[in-house]
Structures are given as C-alpha cells and as structure tokens.
Image (cartoon, rainbow, N blue to C red; front, side):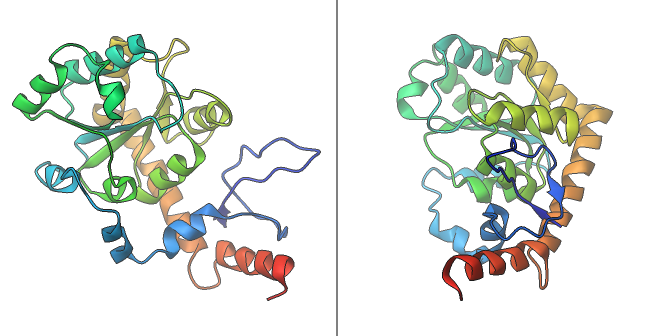
Length: 244
C-alpha cells in the first residue's frame, strides 16, 4: 500500500488515502520523505532553537502551528487564533512570518515569552518538529505536503484550509480518514481553537485520532520499505519516463 493522490482528465482527486493501483504515472511524495536519511534533518538548521524548546516538554503535550507561506490570513483570524492558543492550557510552537507577527494582539508575544507557554518564530524545521515526541497536534492549512509530513510524524491535525485542495484534504482528514478535526466554517475563533485543542489533547476523540494516524504512519513506512508499493511504483515511474 502507499499514500498518494491521483487525478486523470476524467476524474477528480481521489479521497481514499491508502489504495492499490497498477498505474506507473504517480508522483509519490511520501517516498521522498522517507528516503531522506534521518541525519539529513540536520541540514535544516534550527535557527530559532525550536527543538531544544520542545525538549523541555512532555510527550504529546505541544501544539505546532503553521499555516503555510502563501495564504493570507485575516488579522481578525490571527488574533482569534492567538487568543485561543493563550486561553487553552496547551503549550504551542507557532511558525509565523515576521510581518504577520505584527498583526498579533498587543504584547501577546511578550506574554508568551515571559510565561514560556508559547514560542513564536518566523521559521521552523517542520519535518523535525513533527517527528519530535513532544508534538501532539498540528494546526495546519492542510496543504498536501503538510498532511504527509503530519502522517510521517504520527501527529493529528487541526484543520483550517484556505484554498485549492486544502478544503477537500481537511474534510477527508476530519470525516473520512478521521485523524483530525476541522475548524467550523467561519475559520478561527477563540472558542473554536480552544475546543479543537481540547478535543485532540484531552478527549477520547483525540485518542482515536492519534491511534488512526499511527495506523497510517505504519502503512506509509511499510510502503517505502523493501518491495513496498511506493518504492515499486517509483521504479515504474522512472522506467516509464526515462527507460531506466
């Protein structure tokens, strides 16, 4: 089995994450994630000390927040997200561009730095962060690369999609594959953020999400092992494209 998405001119993207196919024309992102040697993560410099900060926290107690680099998040939503993170009792690591940090509520960053509850930085080594045992949830826009990296790390998702495939990814994660929860249609609200984090970290639903994403993680690992379907389909792709 392998994790991928396919699309032909006569179909829409598949909503089934794990499936079999004989088609050689599939681009397998999961293969490349797992093909990187663990030491390769050192090349992604942890400029802002995210990993040592995570080392100070217990297992599956931290929410990691990253909404990508393309979507524009309304200041009102950024403020609601910040207030929700502060109101919850979950420590968090937030990757947020410096220009966007200026839109956060007054003195929010200073309070988080002072209390140690939150760390807001302009960049993180995301794959390493998601593999860190302290991370228990990923608040994400649900771009496909982020979804795969979340599965690789075995981390449930809190979904806030913005455009493109992110919406169907979020719905599939929340209602089909069931290893995450979607924000309500209005986007981030303070109460919605608190409710979602409470669900993932404290309720039985969150335990079920964690079990489900671990099942998918095991499937993906198997798919890129010796004779795994991702590895074999990549070989077929290369043979089909370049005859090697």
